[in-house]
Length: 441
Image (cartoon, rainbow, N blue to C red; front, top):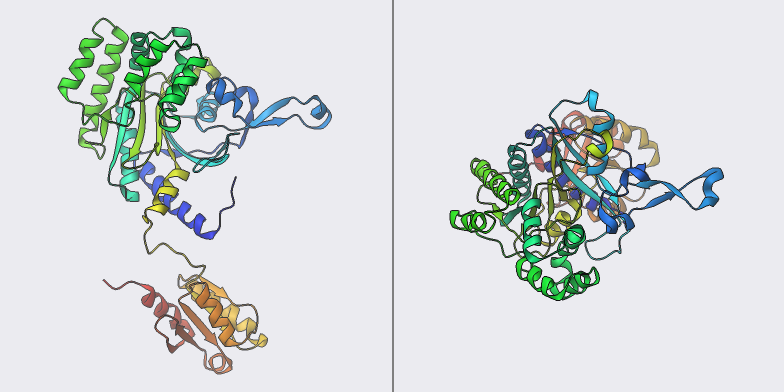
């Protein structure tokens, strides 16, 4: 868990602002849920390994000594969404589209780019089984990455039923499917040999391991497109498996639907894609950037999850972007705009003695009313020291308010970069500073 200094927060707010604007363009509405959920709400939704990563909260008061837990910090934003829909179904529209940007917590081992507290940026549609939902999710996340400045990225898609068929063809016992998918989902982090060892520990034979790694170790080597030849190969392979055929038809339709969107040419079939969460039921998706190990986000269809809470199945599909990973990549690649504010103020107001403090507050209010960010230097230090402070913080202008300026109703504005200064009526100083701040094209 980390502290975020001002520069970090500005970058986060910049990225979050773009994500919100894009999602709202697609008709998604904001939702927030508590940091804490009932423990029973979370347990059993993420597989055995996920259960181990839930931050549990011990019972309090007279029950504290039992050492038992009844609450937990939320592990993701999808299960709380399912709980909300089940709880407030009567208040929500039949087709509910929501986005949610909040922190989640996992008792994981910290590593580079992996934290115990991190933000997720989720977008979900509930109430329809139409593949239009997945196509729109792909288009929305493609818009987000494009507006953030990413050029080379692909959206890999697969289907849970197609994965099931591939596991069966490889000889994996049905009882092991869920655990095997969790392990295969770690291929890009652990590598084939570590995955082989973990598969073996789960009871998968050497011959089945060979078959699985032959199919899934190509993870990241994406097929160039949904070509008819590639699809036909899979249709032929699973000609006797109705569920696999339905999955292939679903994926083909999604690809056709994104043809007129920003996700066109981005979406690619990757049968090696295996997302580990146990609640996925249909199409699954993951977004990858060139020359970057791992993904920037992923998601899929989970038609049965809400039924665990309400007793009534409600179809749903969603996508989650990893804010922390996006921020790391954008920082390393210098992708933030140079105009992104990196200073606390546009202008600092400096006075020559403590008696001018009231006048400084009044002039600062005038400047703020003109749309400027204004920092009032609180002490009557030497003017040189005050200017040095402003320069060190990157504040481009200093407004000097001495006795002469106070009497004349003026303020002297010093441009630190140009080393020039000019005196203005106090009512006109704000407009002059704003004009000087505006880049000339």
